[in-house]
Length: 198
Image (cartoon, rainbow, N blue to C red):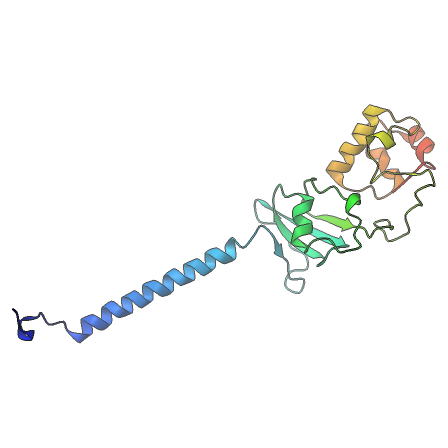
């Protein structure tokens, strides 16, 4: 059996050096993990209005959107390109209890610089009172193809183009926006003006 005198000696300086190296490696690993968590914390990020009131451009692969109206935390958010309206609303904390959920198309892709307004039930996006259910007006922002097809000068093909425009551009701001829909001219707009609303 070897006695204690036979054990190899380790200089104290070497022991401290190894311990310090282990501590440095652990700290570096911790910093790397924290940076990774911050970077992958989700596809959304609230923009601080005080720090950046008008960002020049979203980073590559991302878009800025302004979410307003009946959401828990209205504001400007950064989303991944290809994000849906559902992602923007989730980033803003979700719908409030009085939100008109049927008035928004959650599957629609959002675009950079867009403002998304979730209306309160019973109001238009601009805050006015929506027409009563029995007034006979067709709401361009909530009507389906069947409702649009009942309008004069609007058949199934035009109804589909109205829905496609709404899908691509968001809500109609006014009845005059119908002129932006392919196949609708001044004459058709005049026929529709007192039969539709936004």
